[in-house]
Image (cartoon, rainbow, N blue to C red):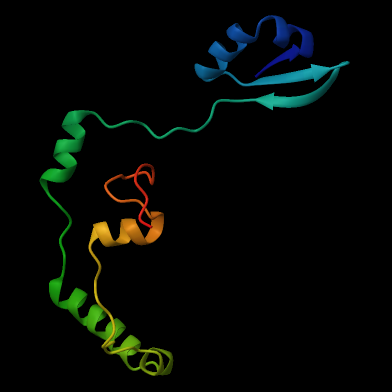
Length: 122
């Protein structure tokens, strides 16, 4: 750990930052009193291409029966919940999907333009 004054840090900030990047820790003082600590961030080590290939060569084992049991248990609980069954809409006879062109005219009033400029429908 090194100690530098505020003025030294200001005047030599590039050198101090290079040292911090290399792993050095600095305490910065103002009027002789330590006011800050400058340290490198903990970073995850990047994996090499070979390490990535080795890691993904053998994917983790999956117990499909256990996964299916958990999914069935989760969705059965959801299907049987009071909130879900009371608010479920089965079908709406008035619902009709719209085409992108219909949506454009309805929202912008414009025909043939993606940004709403040009000819107006009127």
